[in-house]
Image 1 (tube, rainbow, N blue to C red):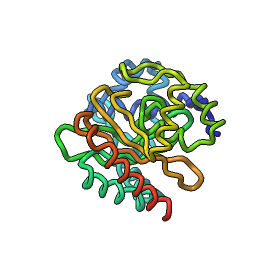
Image 2 (image 1 turned 180 degrees about the vertical axis):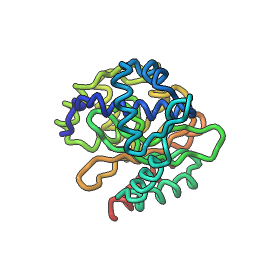
Image 3 (image 1 turned 120 degrees about the horizontal axis):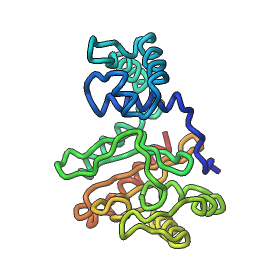
Amino acid sequence: MPNIHAATPVKSAQRILEIFELYAARGEPATLTSIASALKMPKSSCLALLTTLASNGYLYEVRQSGYYPTRRWLDKAQAITANDPLAEVIRPVLAGLREDTGETLIFGKLSDNRILYIEVVESWQTLRYTAVAGQFKPLHGTASGKAALSALPVVERTALIASLELSKVTSRTITDAAELERDIEQGIARGWHISQGENVADAAAVAVPVLLMKEVYVLVAAGPLPRMQPRLKAIGEMLRDARRKIEKR
C-alpha cells in the first residue's frame, strides 16, 4: 500500500525549489532582499543558498540587479528529460491520442495520497484543459484519482480513501467515502473513470489506470465539459485500448 502520509520536506531543499519557482514567475533578476522578502526567510539563510547556487554555476550575479539563473539548469534538465525511462513509450501515445481526441492528454502516477502529473500534451484548441508536468491533483474529485484508486486491492483502497480529506471543491465533488467507492466500482465495470465538473467546475476528464513495473500510473484525457460530455464513452474506449498497448511493451 502506498504511504498515505507524504514525507516531511527538507527545508533547505524546499527553499531552493522556491527560489527557482520565483525566478520562473518573475522572469527577471532578483536581489537578495527581494528574494528573502518574497520567500519570508532570513537574509543570512537566503544569502547562503544563493552563494551555494552561484558557486556551483547555477546562478550568476547581475551588477545592481541581483542574481539570475544560468542555462546550466536548462542543460541539466534537458539531459535528465532525454533519459526519462517512460518517455520513449508514453510521449508518442499521448501525441497520438491528442490527435484522435483533440483534447489534453496526461500521464500521471499515484504518489502517496495524490496524483503527480509526469507528462502533459496539451490540446491545440484555444479552449482547452491546461496542465503542467509536476502538478499534483487530489485522489477524490478527479478521474485520474479514481482510476489510480481502482487499481489498488479493495482493502488498501478503502483504507486510503478513509485517510483522505474529502473536501468539497465544486458543487459536484463527491465528499462521502461510500459514494466515492461506488463511483470507483462503476468505473471498474465500465472500463474507465470519469469526472464531470468535480474538481474544475467547467471541465471533464476520462482516465484509466496503467500498471507498469508494479506501480500505478494513469492515462487521462481532459477538456471543457460541454465538449467532453457527448464523447466520454468514445474517449474512454480510446484510452482503454492505449493502456493495453502500453502495458504490453
